Amino acid sequence: MTKGSSILQRVLVNHFYKVNAGLFIFGFFVLFGLPFSPLAFHLSIITGIIQSPVFLASVMVTWLLYNFKCIDYILHQLADPRQSFLFCLNSLSFKKLYLYMVYVQALVYLPVILYALAIVWLALAKQQYWCAIAVLLFNVIVVSLTALIYIVSIQKKNLFKARFALPTFNINISKPLFIIPLLFLWHDRKQMLFVTKIFSLLILFGFIKLYVPDRYDIRPLQLLLLITAASHSAIVFHIRAFEEEFLSFTKNLPITIISRFMRMSIMYTLLLLPEFLFVFKGLNVHFVIADYPQILLMGIALLCMFHVVLLTDKTDMEQLIRVVFAIIAACFFILLYDPGLLLPAAIMLLAFVLYNSYYYSYEKKYR
Amino acid sequence: MLEFNNIQKYYGSYLAIKVPLLSITNGIWWMKGENGSGKTTFLKMIAGLHPFTGDIILENKFSIKKHRKHFVRLVNYAEAEPLYPSFLTAKDLVELYCETNCGDLQQAEDLLKQLHVYDAYHQRLGSYSSGMIKKVSLVLAFIGHPKIILLDEPLITIDAKAVDTICRIINDKYKEGTSFIITSHQTLHKDQLQFSGTLIAENKTIYTTGI
Image (cartoon, rainbow over all chains, first blue to last red; front, side, top):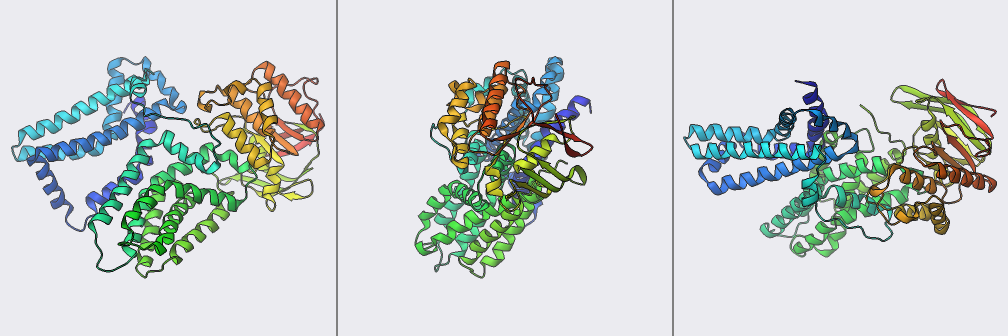
């Protein structure tokens, strides 16, 4: 490994897997954590992909979506002032620079490459050559074209960014402190926000439409709320990182700890507003209006709790995901006993106690 | 005015600063020290941005540990290299500081005009140069009714004309009863700022000397 590729791997690739650890752990859980043989499951999926062009096309669309995520991340990193030293790569020959970028893309795209290789291997074994060629060609084109996009970005031409940037707008009204992290999501983490919201609303929609309870019970909806809250853990992580980097000056403002906690709660209420409104579709079937406060409190309390976890020494995504799983597992078992409003109230109280203890004593650890 | 009792600041297991006892009276203090001597850490501790053991008492009344809200209301701070969300405007920050520090919006806007950044008041900070952001951060430090203002390298990145303006504002504020602790590697003329004394950061501690 040359010095250049080693630096690119450390600066661009390793950080990519670190910040997306939640997504990969979740993906791994979905793909390999099922209660039946993973090998048989994946063999049947790959056989389906080989036999059905529609299935293959939808898999390719999924790969493309993942690649958009890779592109978005790498372009953000290349545009970051802290990575401006990478501009020196422009002194390399085009061929060498291109190979470096292919290397970067191949590493961030590795999960797709590995799965694609498994499909190619099985397609060849089943003598479905057209499928093997299609999968190979598709991924070679994706990797080679994406590497070119990175080169354009390194050369600071910014063609793609300028053409495909999503619209942004600035509302010229007074912005309260609790709204600033949400504006950060809107400006800098659009893709993550949309993907999380789509996932979260889809599972809510699926649950409300497909599950018809025999008798009234709030618990299934509460369990679903746990998944909804867990799916927001990556967003909470980014909000906390933003707060630490750009809003540390607010610690010098004369705001009481209760007021700070209230502002955080309002922020997470606004973040979960689409879910809180959407859940009304299940009114009188999955819950009655008297139970609505505990649904609200449960969602807000869990996100506040995840946020507070990041004020302790659990400061990276991997650690957060572990704690989130532990919290969700504990809540799952407690919910079975139907604790009502007690559980969300207890989580909220615990979150406040921890917030009070750790907010001012928190200090970023440089590893 | 500022009393330091048994201050210890660790980064992990590394002792960065130890101040057993220190008293800083009212005045304009020039804080000196080599890079990495702990000047910024010291200022951030007073501003409430860094946790530490021990206590800091302001005006024999307010402890940073026990009366945090009152303490930070009277202590304003401007960072050496301020970082703000790029999508906010100077107006957003000024309004936030005026709201929390009970500051005068008109006065803050006047300061921005004096520093020639008011034209960009409604623009996003992402479009500002580093000097403009520095000027905004300095204006924010003057908002409210602070008893002490901590300025970490206030004169870097800003133009020569703005240096004179900042010095004039500091002198005016001092006459109104506000004290200052200023770190600066630049030597200032006596006609720019009249320092009351010097704070030295060396050997992991802070002490005062005459000017």
